[in-house]
Length: 492
Image (cartoon, rainbow, N blue to C red; front, side, top):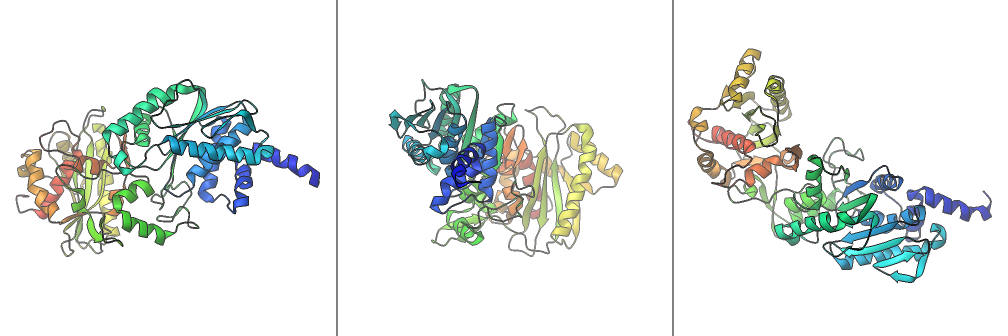
C-alpha cells in the first residue's frame, strides 16, 4: 500500500470494523481491547448490522464496558448510519451528559477518520447534531425524553446505588420510565443496548429477563462475571478464572470480596443478585461469618471439608405444569457430624414436570446422589431420597420400589404438621449455625415459572409466617432435611 493511500484505507477500515475503530481511538492512550472487550465488540457490531436489536451487557464495575458501549459505539454507528438518532440514558442526567461530552469530543478529535463532524449550531454536551444529520440526546433515567425519536437507545447503569436498588419505589419508577417514556421513543426497527452492573433481583435487568421468560422482548444477554462460574462461560474461561487478569487478578478480586461481603460481590461482580434475608430465616445463619480487612464482618458460603459422613435428598413433588402450580423440588444434603456444622446443603433444583415424566426424573436424583457421594468422599455413601408421601409423592415412591431405587417416605409426624410449625421447629438449628450452604448452591441460578434467580434463597429467605400463596416447594425440602438430620427420632 502506498503511503498516500493509507488515510483512505483507515477511513474505510473504521467504517467496516468496530474493533479497528476502537484500536484507533484507544491506541494513543496506550490501550487496546482485551479478550472480553473483543467479545463485546462483536456483539455491538451485530447490533449495528441489524442482527441483534436487544442487547443486554452485564459486567462488573471497572470492566470498561461503558468505554465501548457508551463512548466508542455511538460515533462508530454514526459513521456507518449518518442520519441516525441516539438517545443515551444513565442513572443521572449528569452522568448521561458526561458520556455525551466524551462522544462529542471523540468526534471532534477523529472527525476526519470518522467522515463527519458536528453541526456548527448544536454542540452542547448532552444534545448535539452531526454535519450529516445525525442526532444525540442524553437524559437521566426518569428524565423527559418526549419529543425525541431514536434509532438506538442506550441505557448505561440505570442503578445509582445500593440504597436506590433496595427501594421498591425507585425500582418501580425506573421500570415505569423504561416502558412509558424510553421505550415509546423508539422508531420502528430501533435497537436497545442496556449495559449495567446488577444490584437487585428486580432491577431493570432483572425485570427485563423476567419479561423475556414470559414472552416479552427477546434479549441477547452477554453476562460476564468477574470470576468464571460456569462450564459454558462465554469466553471459555476455567472456573474462577478472572475476567480481565491484566487489570484485576484473583488476589485483587478476593480482597474486594472480603471487603464488601458475599451479597454485594455476588451482585456487582458476579452479576447474580440474591435476596438479603427476610422476616423468618436469616440467610447469614447458613453462611460463615469472618472479619474483613477493614474489621467488618462478611458472610461466605462453605466449601465442604472431605470426607463427609453421608449424602441424602429430600423431595417435594407436584405433577401439574401450569404457571401457577407448584413444582417438583429436590435438595441434596451432606451430613458432616464431625465438622463444626452438622449439615451442608450441597445442591438444589426445582422444575415443573408432567407426572408421566417423574419416573424418568427420579433416577437422575439417585445418580446425582452417587455423584455427590464420590465428590465429597462420603464414608457411608448415599442414604437415598426421602419423599413427601402425598399425591404424586406416593406415585414416585411406588416407582422407586419397582426400580429398586433408595427412597422412602418422610415420616408422617413431619408431613402432618403445618408449614409454619415446621419452620419454627427447625429454626433453632439454623440459628445455632448447624446448617450451611455450599458455594455452588449459593451461586446457582435457574429459570422457574418465568423468573430467573436463586429460587432456593428466594423461597426460603423470603418466606413469611402467616402469608398465604407463597412459593414454598424448596422451603418444604429445606425444613424436612434439617428436621431429619438434626432433630430427634420424631424429626424435631
